[in-house]
Length: 503
Image 1 (cartoon, helix red, strand yellow):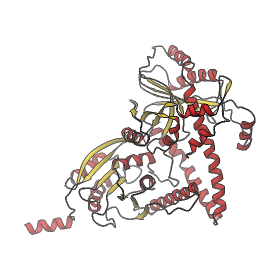
Image 2 (cartoon, one colour):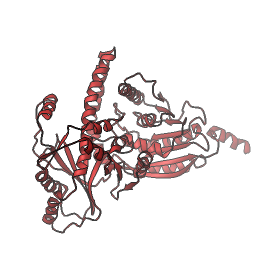
Image 3 (tube, helix red, strand yellow):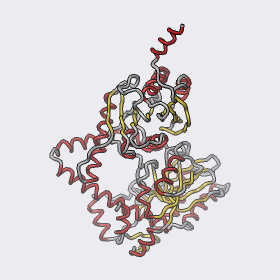
Image 4 (cartoon, helix red, strand yellow):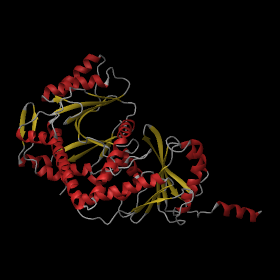
């Protein structure tokens, strides 16, 4: 039984304070809640909306609506499927929709618009979305407690406890050092890059007590929930700012529920998403992006796990396929592949020894996490890390089924000038190791001019079937889907020799 289902079945002692009154949850309420249908919204990497919709349809059996606001999808599920939603690989953040207004009529005067936002708070159907949030919050608490218990057990079971502690400190230190970069990437990779994002700032009412005191206090006496309102606004025809909308709408929410405003240590995050004339009010179900998985050792160009998953889905891996990332960096793509497509074999390679070392450490961390989760030794993962030269791969001709990689953009890594020689050499070597006719490649790059030129000279071995435009760190990049043609690979030296004999 999955974690959220357990939380749903055991959620008999959770009180929800709404309008200063507590609602006692009973078994019959839980049964009715498990059958409740709700609309879930998800943010996804911009450009991979259709890929995410396909995953939802495949794994949840739900039809999906792609928002006009790029990078968002919506689908209807029963609450008992909430666990499966959290297991989706293509979504970044989740929220439950309170109400959606497809054609919201904004007034021309700012004061009137803000007054409408104030009045809106008391008219929304909060009940069912708050039930979903309640179940979701209970699940997160159980998960956090279980994580602490598993960490303590793992320290007792492993003999080399001191080494494990040192490794955990190093992982934490490296993760912390990249925390700011990750936060910045979260903003720039937001579906609406130009949107104005603002959060209702309330007094910092966080208690300085430790977690044990806080948890014991929760058990003995009911607490007033703390909240914040985050407004995501995109469009140029609004007479108000996001900060003003969040402030006035948040004030009305506070008056309606009698909650306390707290920007940092909040229990509930209310979302006010505005895109032109579309307004959606929701409640966040994730505290941090779901793409923050698998990777513990970061590099200068670490790819988001959700982007990696989307690229892998584009090449439609089959059982027993050999999938290679010849420029793996920290190994985000092959690690995501080894997690989701366990019946394939994945090879992570790079010419930089530091990158290979990071990839190997990320593989080891993922294996350790898997062992702790299952509570028993694991046979390992179908993945290996190798140091090599992209232009001279130690692989047999025609031995690889799929190549998926993030090419250097020429900004943080490499240079635009070097790409003019690197890209043609990469495509040539990839065509050698890739299986004719059935082989395919999915390549990401922001240097589209250089790649288009390189591909034009390799049309006899590579055929482009699709181009997906994505947002990577605020940059407009392209994912090229290529198919290997039936033509056998011929080494350039052999081609020159053939030309010499003809003449």
